[in-house]
Length: 287
Length: 343
Image (cartoon, rainbow over all chains, first blue to last red; front, side):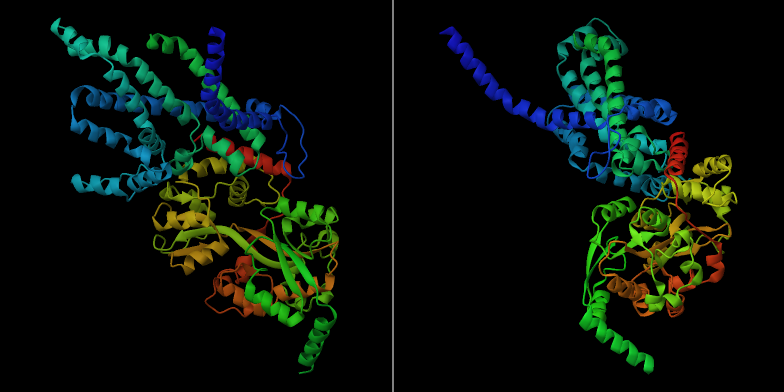
């Protein structure tokens, strides 16, 4: 009887899980393995082109310093954007979770998520209008300040960071919010009643308890920003060459898919290595 | 009168005897496939025309290699004509069978890339320039030198296309070198290193260019002559400049594949394509410059192709682009990527 039940359970579990696993196979595993395969070819195996299996694409990364320089540049960009997002996002999340109550919280929450609902290209182009030399920001600053200033942030690393922080900020706000909400208010009251100053409550109580949320948000931001290409290309001007844009070039402009695939897998490996190096901290934060 | 009768008679004979269907291989929307012209061509010669398109020079060569006998006329950029000839893909052309050939600009008809091995393999058809265009309202007097790109006063108001080969060629011209035989790559590198801080952003397409120029993002940028004529026609206040150091020229020719079975009809079509009457009408729609001296002379005075590119002094400054070897191409790309990565 019991074995019957177990088998039934297993079939049910299988049926319930199969959509997810089929989806993972079709949407993630197959394309990724196709790309992994491409990365070892000498040319795209389309049409009449001749190709053979080779390691040249990976060797290319090691031989040309350019790609390593760009990868380092992209990692720095990822760190900067993540840092700004956390510094801006965490206070936002704190205010949402602990200070504001009732209706206005919902309204503010909506405002936080709103950027997610618009197409990322639209967001970037609106930033272009704001940041341009004779754009909205310049006009506004000149309207307020009595002396003449020329603000032109467009086509600079600053513009890239602004665009990326705006795009990814909601992640860190949402994850921090969830973590902060889980903190029991009575804990904070207890600390306060025992005379802990605000700073101590923040560093010894709130930050450690909210750490899993903050770190989850940071990882969610860091990974895609390192590979980003649209924001650097459209907002960065001559500074806009990053690791992601070079990969995009291989696929779109130069038609060198094998090299593009190899560069992508190197990026994947580096990001995984970074996450692995930080995993002790991540694990500590979780417990 | 006699000539007219003869032409009519010839046309009649042609119509009755050899009404062929010819197949043309070209970029889409590039002159050969205009409806009104094809209708008139069929009416005059009886031949009908079918098109097939390519999206890159490599694709064009592949199509010629893999489909022998499928095409009768093919458009080949002069930098690729020798390669097609060496692979035996195209046949020498008997220019005596193309009546309009005598009106072609002799320097183009004798272009060495179209005459690999001293024999004509491509009939020069159109040409154009990659040079500079400036915002006319910012420059009371148009610049005459490429050094305007390096002018410290214009820092952050300059743009070029994000293309390694083109960037290297401009730097080569600015350092007084021949774009087809660059000896001093160090000078090119140094020049490009100095150029990058001048640049605000790279442009990618004609549309990009128009927007950035209109919004004042840049005031001087490299540009294509054909696009410049269209932008001016749209009312953008720009001046197309051919600097004294030169401009990059490209030349397109029409060739006949060696496997063509309708050679006479193909010649008739090429003759039609270089006919002044066709070109003047095409120019009104926005065309590249013609190889036909007579056609160029019959353009209206206001035409961009006549005013800017029709000036012999301008043409004398042009450096026509020769074939680029794969190794050189890769060297240029690596140099460019390296410079951009360090920004």
